[in-house]
Length: 243
Length: 181
Ligand code: SF4
Ligand code: SF4
Ligand code: FES
Figure 1 (tube, rainbow over the protein chains, first blue to last red):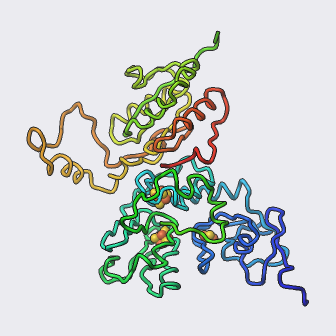
Figure 2: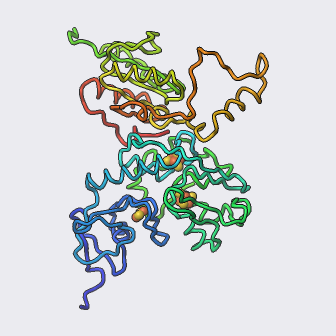
Figure 3: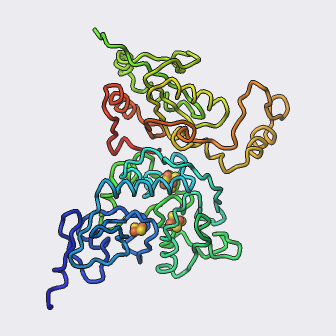
């Protein structure tokens, strides 16, 4: 009753975190400098809630913090061995579901999937690899699309639709058959109006969407996550482009 | 001076490039310290052909053919602790880039379409190990006790890992030592 909006708080791992009505747990945490691991969330876009890395325990129940609105007196557990071990298992599943050969990937060192795996101390992918054949589309003059590395976060879908107003990408299929598709009769990126300057060309957290002729401009060893943890980089006010 | 029995260590490279072995040699003068603590069993450094009872076995490279499986099983059988070192042993690595290409297409591309010395033919000597349809990480074939990622892990990383292991500590890598590239 008349209390200022910012006086409402939740606690995350015992720390008081203020929130505004309608704000998600994730965004309240980001604003308060509390890191909750996330891959499909990017504060510039509407939440998507697909990777489940951001799951936290809210009053004893597991919830997706990037989609769950904060509410007065929520007691949130985030950085716990149990949740981090679940998160590591999720990242391991992403590794074996795609074809991630980091030493041969231009995104290595700038990749958020890899960085999340480093943060969670993933020493091996643990599970049996699927080795699913996935396509590489080099039809566009300026951009590669290597679906071996797509984690279906839909950031490119959201960016193309919401920022570029183009709708170049979509998700199709179900379950293990789910895949990223290109909105063209041929299904080829070269037959769309996608441009290297589009927002969607710069939001991929992995090495799926790569700008051509930029390869290894920054040498391995001098890249974003070579020396800085994802927990620091994703807390910086403006996330760098991931190319 | 050292009355203790030396740790016995074996190494091998399966479908790898020997880069991890080169990185081990890169510990330079610390090799003398290492040899004070361990003695080598089967390894490319000694040219011993079969692995006897060992404390630690280090495997580089993924599993790409029948011979790789025999070597790997021999290591698992004789080594108390088995370590998978490098991207290839842990994920299949660069050799696993062939996993989504049909094996026959690979053979044709390598042996038939490009000119060879004595005409174009696919090698078919009974001495040659049979290749698998795919390259597998070693943990999909035998139980692995420790993983040391990197392509290759740096000499410092290998030294940190090995000294932890030899001196009885749980191996622990700092953030900058854990890398997949
Ligand atoms: S997209 Fe990331 S995790 Fe996948 S191969 Fe490239 S660097 Fe590795
Ligand atoms: S291409 Fe990249 S941004 Fe798009 S869904 Fe796949 S991983 Fe996400
Ligand atoms: S960050 Fe919340 S589900 Fe992906």
